[in-house]
Length: 259
Ligand code: GLN
Image (cartoon, rainbow, N blue to C red):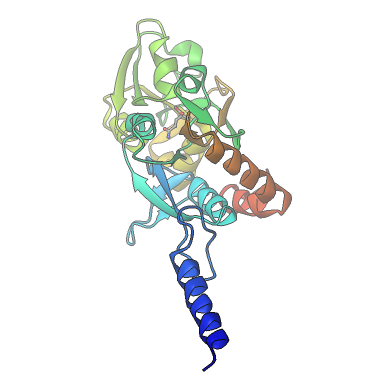
């Protein structure tokens, strides 16, 4: 072997070693590189946005499909963690997770603490009452009533503004619906698309949805304030998914119509 050949061989080995160790961090998936992990927090009792399969406990729903598509677009591996809705923003602030997708409304109060992506879904609040209740027809009829809400939500904020209402906060909307069924509350205030889904799937035997939506709310994907780079990447991925039809496909899968 000539000195030149040995030199080339050594160089080859060196390049290979460099290639294998990589430059760390944000490598796209594929080509043998290990994809960077995107740690996602969600409160998975908010069907059809996030819920867990009855048997496999797999995370399913519109938000879950959307964040997986966004992760793929960014070349990152998506890891989903479940936590209480009121614990999501603190977890972001503490750096325990990178993003929150959880049917979370972009509000002025939250914008003080975290960054949001561009809006990705339009929502609003409606009321669910017991089947046959003809006294509560809208938000104007809720004064002095017992109202169930999910803790830390826009529904909870609105309920607290109602005169003389007794507001009871539950960890999840299904728990509030259970209490409605049991007669412990007169009404539940919650996001319309989730109420729609509950009516369709199970609720309409015992419950009814009433009233025009009280609010117009936009859902956004939250990131830590200091992580502006990630927020920009998410917006870019969202734009691409809207352009290439993937967003529409996911939307139609969960809502049965075009956005
Ligand atoms: N959209 C409501 C909010 O942001 C409720 C979200 C939820 O319960 N997952 O407060």
